[in-house]
Image 1 (cartoon, rainbow, N blue to C red):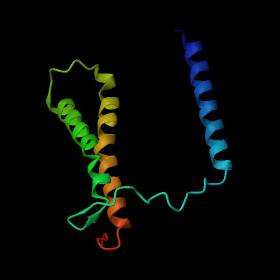
Image 2 (tube, rainbow, N blue to C red):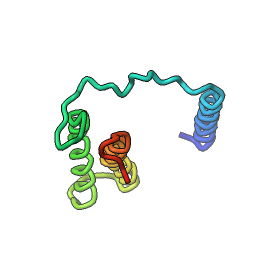
Image 3 (cartoon, rainbow, N blue to C red):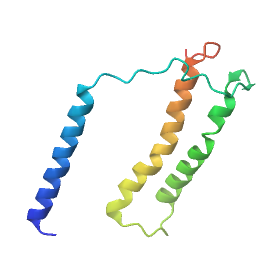
Image 4 (cartoon, one colour):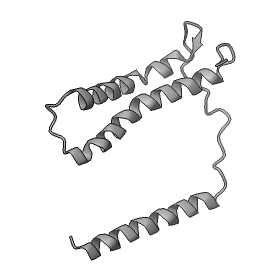
Amino acid sequence: MTIQKEKIALLLIGASSITVLAALLSRAPVPQDLTYHDFSDVVSLFNIPNILNMLSNLPFLIIGLLGLYKLINTHSLTIVSENKLSYFAFFWNYPSCFWLRLLSFLARQPNIGMG
């Protein structure tokens, strides 16, 4: 690919990104249904309601941590060094999303609270 084609491709990606961002910012927020958090899971365990909803996210936590472990501690992986940061960001996303979801879930619970 020539430098001219790369510049055109970057320009198109940038213009598309700005257009989508402007469209999103010009719209009003999507209204949320008030029953959105009324889960069908009503099981309580250890005084935590809807525990099965949270436990269903554990496989994502495990996969993310295993991926990070393999990426950091194993030198037998054949990953191009330029792509290592992308893989790290991908596997970091799983555990961080799990913890953020857990914290927001616990903050919504009146009998548990966050502080």
